[in-house]
Image (cartoon, rainbow, N blue to C red; front, side, top):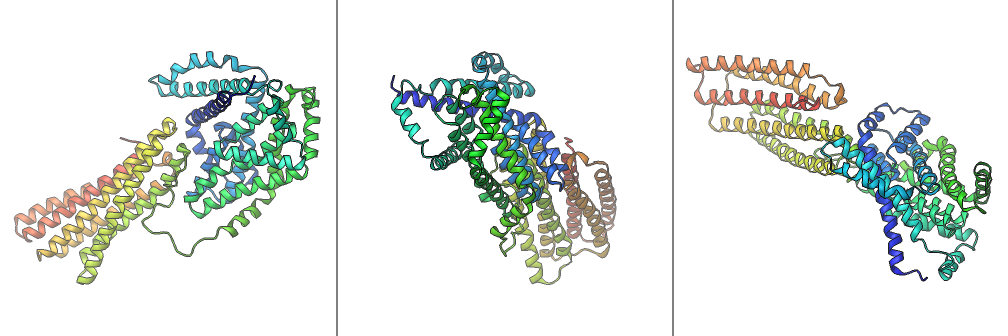
Length: 561
């Protein structure tokens, strides 16, 4: 039987189904463990061994090494962890990613679980349409597992038979008889395929299945695995293009680690293949060279051994790897613009952890709103016309930029919300959207106050000293509220207390009530003009509104409605 184009497309489709199963499984695991995984990074310290174990456990949990690498790039981009810490974590993640390979090869290939894939899919697929989110997530998890094993089963079915496709088999065999050149060729094939499908696990499994079907020798399948390990760095490299210099350094460090590991593996390639054969024969009972049933164990062991030994050999060189990356990617002399978002907007795909980037940017955004409010007392006191005009234009600039930032944050969070999130992540998005809008409302209030002062000046009215003193009293309390709000934004949200912000808000309300009561009495007694009294009343009322927005931000931080 000739191997037709339909057969080839069916094989590619089977691989696509398998890759989608991996993706669905990883997304479900991320939703289940997302909240807990975010908290783990708060405990990261400077111990390289601890960082490696952190990467191992998290990568084992989410089972998606490419997305995990992108996540680490985003963490360094956001300044959440240092470059040296991230290198340790990402090395541990390489080891953690091998856990999935063991499960798939030993269960999926060794015990023909593909036959129960369709019944499992029939049982669990309805859970995806459940109204309860937890059932939906567990449904996605089980459907991912079902598709994964169905995909493996179909890949095995559509791989052409040796006896019926001798010409094709002869061509493939000829590629494998050139010794070291064949090894280099299949490393490139593994790298190229991984760069295309963006899943090193899929290419590793595909190499194991091809070897299992006797299409690849043990050496060439191992070479594809080495290439896939380099190829897994492509996704974070692409993600780092639009990130800051620290993220670029991590992406390059990741590439450097894998290249160094592959170079070491090539030096001892013949020895390691013999060692894998020896270990497999000792554990499995037969040699993978003579018994195809031992191949999944042999290649899974090789994949794990490569990542473990690479980590062991290079753990002491982490500072040197970081230094090389720093020498290659040097900072520019120009500083970042004050009004730019420093952490979000890079297009990272790991949605659950993208929220940490937003959380890192919100305090800077809030600080802009405080700087804008700080111009109001200066505008009120400024007498020089040129300085006054420049200050007013600066306030207008801040208002425009803050509007733009609010739109950028909202757009980014809406994109993140379309990804895979835990229930905690969904709640956090709602809180962050509210925080961003409240900051923008504060800027609107400050701009309104600037316009009110401008209008007062155009009317040639002025405030008596008592009015100025009362406004200063209100502004001082508002500054306390601003500082507390920024402090809370810079703190872990689950550690924030709402009590102090509420007490400050009560103080603002008390001052507002006392000043307005006094204002009505003095207006009745004609102690100052109607126009100046109207402007004064507006500034006091707007200040109290700013206090409300500041309290709303603190409430959003702790998750209150």
